[in-house]
Length: 209
Image (cartoon, rainbow, N blue to C red; front, side, top):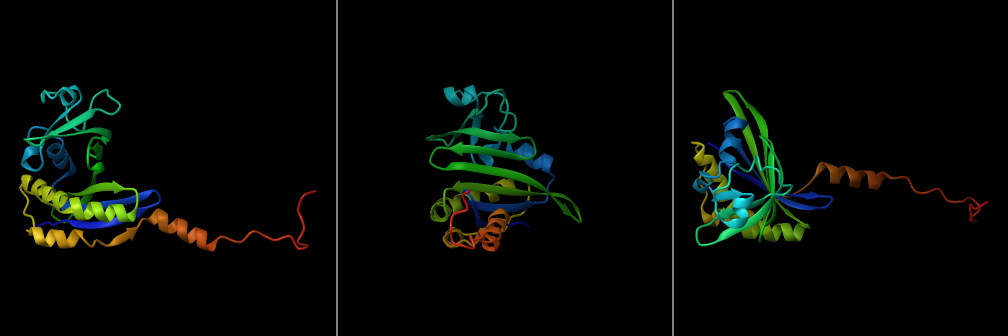
């Protein structure tokens, strides 16, 4: 049985809401399910990419992992009474998808291999970016429970057992997430703290010749 693991990660240029979910399924299978536009409504919403997303026809070819020739192809999710528009910023097959959506900002999904004693597995990592810690905490409180729920639904769509979580439990969890500093930021802070001071002129005068 699997479950989500959320936290905030502070980077040099901002802070991310990070939600990890281990899946006892190989990366190829997870990726195939993730980018399947027609079955995505079983865990989030059906989507269209490229010209189909722009004109609303919903019958475009391809998936989120093969956006075609567009540098940043449009993507539209069909939420029933409304549509959620955005663009694909980056995508690599069986590795990651990075999108920017209206009202939600930059969202990412990354897949990493996990080795289990009973077979291959995948670590699914979801991120929602924010410019600073305060903004990230607000986004986590507002959107975290929703993303968490959809990630659990995604795992179930793969036939996996997922730990149940009530709305109250998720609201409490995402209202006070642990803040983690990235390795790069920690290393930079350590370097700054150990930097040697500039040598002073022994006579207190100018070094100009």
